[in-house]
Amino acid sequence: PVVDRHGGEPGQLVQILREAQGVVGYLPAAALTAIARALGLPRAQVEGVAGFYSFFHLTPPGRYRVLFSDNITDRMLGSGELLDRLCNKLWVERGKVSEDGLVSVDTTSCTGMCDQGPALLVNGQALTRLSGERVERIGELIRAQAPLADWPAEYFRVDDNIRRRDTLLSAEWPAGAALRAAIARGGEAMLAEMKLSNLRGRGGAGFTTAIKWESARRAECHAEADGRPAARYVVCNADEGEPGTFKDRVLLASYADLVFDGMSVAALTIGARQGLLYLRGEYAYLLPALRENLERRRRSGLLGRAVCGQAGLDFEIDIHVGAGAYVCGEETALLESLEGKRGIPRIRPPFPVTAGYRGQPTVVNNVETLCKAALIALRGGAWFAGLGTKQSTGTKLLSISGDVETPGIYEYPFGVSVNQVLQDCGAGNAQAVQVSGPSGICLAMHEFSRSIAFEDVPTAGAFMVFGTHRDMFEVARNFAHFFRHESCGFCTPCRVGTSLVANCMDKIAKGLGTQYEINQVFKIHRLLHAASHCGLGQAACNPLFDTLQKFRPAYERRLCSLDFEPAFDLDQALAAARQMTGRDDPAAHFGLAARLPGVT
Ligand code: SF4
Image 1: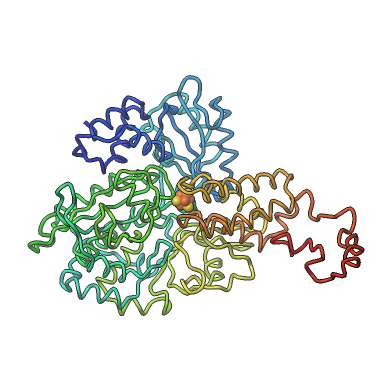
Image 2 (image 1 turned 90 degrees about the vertical axis):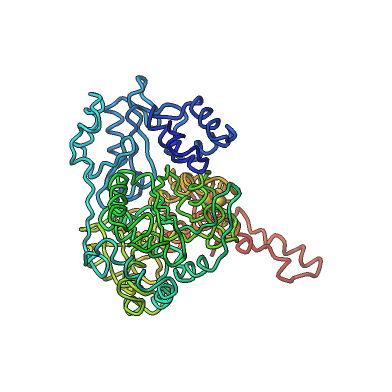
């Protein structure tokens, strides 16, 4: 029945697996075989997809599956101790299932609740603001086998924590207003407004949105092999997986109409009839409200056939839920996942704007980008271009967490200084800020006068603050483990490199590292940057490289030997040989420093 509900469509495989797992709690071999048969897919392909995503289980997990968020800010709030406490309470070893099959306790990458951590997921549902007392109570509820519906609702409360409002967050945006404004303009004129606005993508890469939209609008689409008509697609990337980022969660929870309006404006501009919202698995709790919203839009004529009464203007939106794979935030990996495959980034070109979802022209935009596009439809490109800086127009939502008094969402015009942001969120003793998550940039105190803007410090939104009492080596080690866990394994430099780097960091942490490990990190950084297939591998060593440059003592105090001290002077020992051969050019000298990269 699960397969039938999805029309026997192989492209729905990830959704089918999610629902099948919901029935028995995991994906037994017989279920995979049955799904493969019903979809007409090789069994190995179905198992390959099921094995790729970390939220799919091929063996039974505990009936209560507890996953603590392992983001560095959760750790700073004591998540590690809370995890140990729950394991002790339940007599279960971390990463294992209890003997009676009742419970399993482990960690997962960031759950997107950094402003109200420590957080965990129980059977996919987020619990926030954990404390020792709350964890004790959770242990009792699990032991009593209480259904999640009977747990205190307060445990599941997720706040928006909007702390600073600017253009987007300071107003109410009535559903459909932006869409109607775009319809009144028409597709070409809307595109002209987008060009005027100079809106750049808010997901991290900062690509000019109008160029994407224009390329998709002009690209040719083709009738598909299975008889589907030629089509263009709009995809909303709501796979907000970068540790420290949670702004899209708030937009989806409280500004969903603006997101859907943005998708509809994009569809009108490029000529798409189908939109897809890819929601990260950790935010599945938002699904009922989002579906209800779509239903409301259908009833109000904002979705479906003849949108806003315009004959021939049809647009539908489907929601796909991810299954725990950070790499799916990369747009081509996301498209693969939408097509029911493993989320492995594609080789580009071709780019999604010419050959994206199902090989058709596709625009993939971040949640915040689409909200901004809706504002441009309402107020015009010139108005938008007047906000922020010349190269970074508009405002930016920052997700602020870590050592601050008031973590949450802050909206600023681009160009705001890091100092100003730190002052506003009450970060009195910051020694470092990790901007844009582990793949971003780590700023030290002397850089706090820099500005949040594409031309200076670009960001997808994460802004993690570390006080002077924090150990920046441990921050970098957490990020190294994150990348090892999230590497999709497709290409060797990233698969092996991220693992080697995490091992080096562990060795240094144990006090067994030497200068050799530091040199190895530099070497692997260069290799990953040059040879990785996608941005994840290319950025995987960024935090180590940054912290090594800016917080070197945090590493050096752990090294068991800082200097190599030779037992004798080899160069001097060669002096006699040089004299005999009559050769004394630089190459005849033994230069130790020249042979050790990274040693200054
Ligand atoms: Fe996968 Fe890493 Fe290669 Fe990207 S760089 S394709 S994440 S293995």
